[in-house]
Amino acid sequence: MKIEKSKGMQDLLPADMAKFRLINEVFRDSCLKWGYQEVKTPTLESLHLFTSAGTLTPSMLGKVYSFLDWDGWSGERVVLRPDATIPVARLYIENMADKELAKLFYIVNTFIFEESGKKNREKWQFGAELIGIGSPMADVELIVLAMEVLEKLGLGNVELKLSHAGLTRGILQKLGMNQEEQHQVFDKLLDGDASVLNQLQADKPGLAPLLALQGQSSGFVKNLTSALALDLPELKPQIDDLVFIADALQALGRSFKIDIASVRGFEYYTGNIFQLFINDEKVGGGGRYDDLITAMGGKPTPASGFALYLDLLMKLIDSGRLTGQAAPTVLVKIDTAAANTGFGLAVQLRKAGYTVKLHLGGQGPVDVQWKLEVHNKAPQLVLTDLAQNNKHELKTIEEVLKILKR
Image (tube, rainbow, N blue to C red):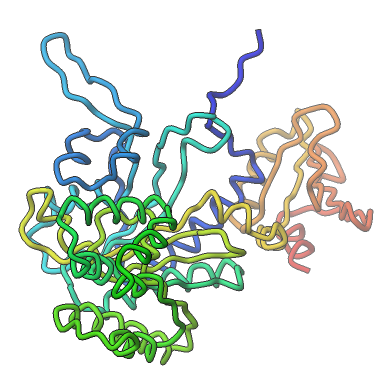
């Protein structure tokens, strides 16, 4: 019987891992240079962590991998983490709540059940969380950091969409809906059900069109209320936040699109939301979640963050970016009687920055640029440029390195 991998899971082959590591290194380098520190949370978390604060929609909770962690007498229901931000918030509450500011980043896998098994059930993502500061300047920093990573990866034509969860919820409240009705509409928007906007505009034609508004400048936000001759003073703080962020991005030469109702997938966000698209596919996003840490039992703490979807970015990375980065590869073929000398030479080549593969029998590796033969008699060292088929008979490692450096 042929054994295959579980449905919805994926293997990462050497070519995949080369892209995985490239993205990892670019992201990690960028975060460190912006002053963020790396953390890692457990794959297994308490289900209560995700249900106590109402941080996931009902449809999301129905797709988590959950089971009873049973010790024979009692047990606790646990899950494979379906989200990365909530565990980082828990980590902060348990270990770093005394810090005025925590700038953290992570690279983790998350798990969501998908019935058909044709889509990935395990997804990799990397992200950053800025905890302790409520300024919209922090939101701008995260947006610029996320876009910088995509640019360093050589991914052009990135579309940035801005919205504001507080503004969207405020408009829903202004429509005269009770708390339950607001939650129902917001949950549909979170799940990407745009038809709810058409229904709202039909039922409440005065204010509902605000949710469908879209624009591409801070001026659009500034004129948001006057566009429909409406006075919404209670929403001024949310509009001011969005104006600041839009103004800052414009000053930095960053283009964006404002889409008030675009909140899909941001269950616990309270303020600014941003989403990043490449070729109409969402590759990441984030925003402000000032109520999350309090809802999880921590003290009132403003926070914001983002995540980028590693699986999708791996498909977009040009394989050409992986060539020319590694040091030349040298195949070392050692006579049995010269084993000590050969292994010693391989160590020195690696210390000099070269990739070294030993010839272990058969035809040997083919993906090499140079071959170094090590004999126990003259000529002791024979270095061959496999591309040019040029051979050099040498005596010392210094002579070998001199030719390789050419």
